[in-house]
Length: 383
Image (cartoon, rainbow, N blue to C red; front, side, top):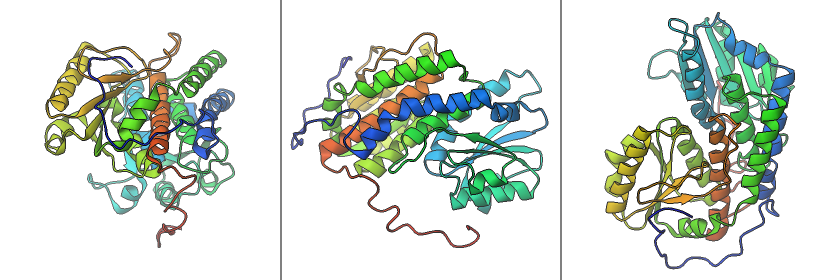
């Protein structure tokens, strides 16, 4: 690890032998399948670019990304890249890109409207059977919007009602969303035009992600510290805010510890009041570094350190920073890959860190403790 600040010494840390990168636990096996799932997804889009063509259609007035859970988190991660692509279309041609949680689309969002007949609605569901997302898709279809399904299953109820379907090559997934998150994000980035699905990009990306899968030794001391942290705050800067929400979700599902996700400004203007010496602040920087973002991250890190918290920067670029924080290293991203690929590398590192922390804390279990056992199908209008 690099950086000027060390992780604090903790007491009661659980001595553990870190599991192999590819198992034998379920999460390890599925993480190891992530690089192939990403490559398979891009290959599917390369052969059938219907999803990319749908986004490029001029007829839509807005683009609306819809999902829930991990699918919603991936929509938030990809949305900034979609907006960049829209701005590149030229003045007067850029369309708004909205992200809606599925139930918000059904019960009404804060802006008072859900779908419009001139919308392109991208409904995201790994299973293609999420009741909330299916109902949202039905509402979009009823109003005349064009619907694109992003799913790992076809046929599926969602694919059956869609105008076009983008297949995600993640296959069956048993536990928390890991390889399906990676593959879904790759699909959304490719649809936005931010990640070319050609063979060279696929090979470079699969190779780099496979290196990240294998590079787990540096995560062990960080995971052992996080396993004993009193509180964890996940702070996303700009486009990385979606990654912060994805991190909090997998933290609850696999580590079984609370993690609060926020933007950098939300953290600095309120949440920081609850930060103390037993806390870890996990900072997720944007995929594109600039002098402004580095200055803001330095300010955030200094303030968190001043109240006694450990500051951890999770950054797939593995570039040291000149402010008080610990940077978790990762294999360097190949220069031939677009900057958006850093989102995939950081997401994979987040998943690895969650797995390592769960094992270090002794809280890891295959599957789910509550989902599938306590959470029941929602009443009408769902299903």
